[in-house]
Length: 320
Picture 1 (tube, one colour):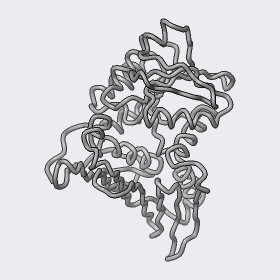
Picture 2 (cartoon, helix red, strand yellow; picture 1 turned 45 degrees about the vertical axis):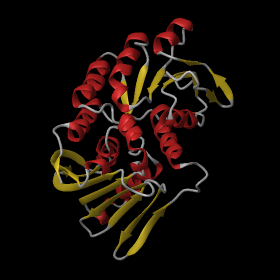
Picture 3 (tube, rainbow, N blue to C red; picture 1 turned 90 degrees about the vertical axis):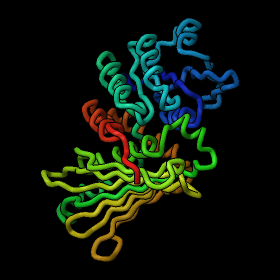
């Protein structure tokens, strides 16, 4: 895909879709040429210019020959399989980026990643895995690998204050596990390979959407375990990943703050932070799109994406 004149269509002009658009404004080589959203009131601007918004993909095709290089699918999670199928029908030459998780069922995730992805390139928008604080963590731990040793334990914690608007959150995202568990697994994938889900429990009242999962992972031939906690029962958003190394050192990444540190021998040996000029979500998506579109890095292979979705979606949680 040439770095000049990349044309992008964004499907779904809600929270995720508009963040994609703001992040893409930071990449000179791309232009958002259209949006698609079922809401008649949806408006879209890109670099302060109005962009046409069509009610369906069929309308975008029939009203104007757009020929996009990339189609970003940012609709509610339960709709991803249907929309990605339509993108494949109407724009078979486009690359598809679908919001994470690819779907809320393993069958649909495989249909998107392997089915549609078997005909045209499909990637999943693992924005947290390629965020600035995670890229920093990967870089620092790689440089310090000899002194840190191997990762021996991982703990991930994600919480969102969706309890007061639970019906809307369920319709858009499914559960806290489906929405945030994939973030946790994708971040872990940058440091160790999750290979097996040991168990998944739902804690307390089902309406609180709180989950705990345990995963076996591999790093340099050694096994370690990762605990992933998710919840929609909180006063404010919270997202962090903590990785302990065989030397006793710890890497801590605060994904909401876009910050992190490494602690060795009781003191801080490295710190990372951000100026706060760019909001957290936009900072994550800027980094994702820069890595993918400008540096042309593969986000994750289709095999890795299928593995992560199997770990996320296969089987049902047992009561806590």
